[in-house]
Image (cartoon, rainbow, N blue to C red; front, side):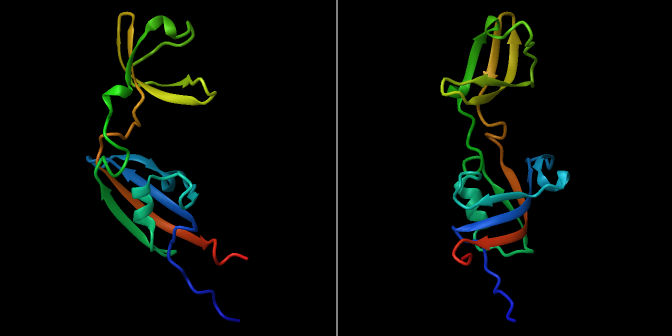
Length: 154
């Protein structure tokens, strides 16, 4: 019985992997390894930015790599247009906006958008709807646990 030939990650691959995202100071922003639950994605499904996906292309099961990405390649730059000053009255009596708290805001289409409370001054609450890692250079460390290529599966 012949062994299947190992293939690297392609644009059609389903990938099982651990990842860690570190900030400039070395602190961990997110990690699947920390929780012992690997991530699974189908390349091109929108789970990762195109630049993150480019980093994975060609990697094989069992490989580990580290990539440092500038803000423009990772989560983007912080956009001042995504920072809003809301009236304190917009928050229900049961919601106390505190700096650093992430609050989910209902969108007209029924989805929820997370916003980070950046400042509370009197009746004004500053909410930042940028991605929490926007503006940061990040190090993306990956360990590829499995690669399934759609073209091989029948």
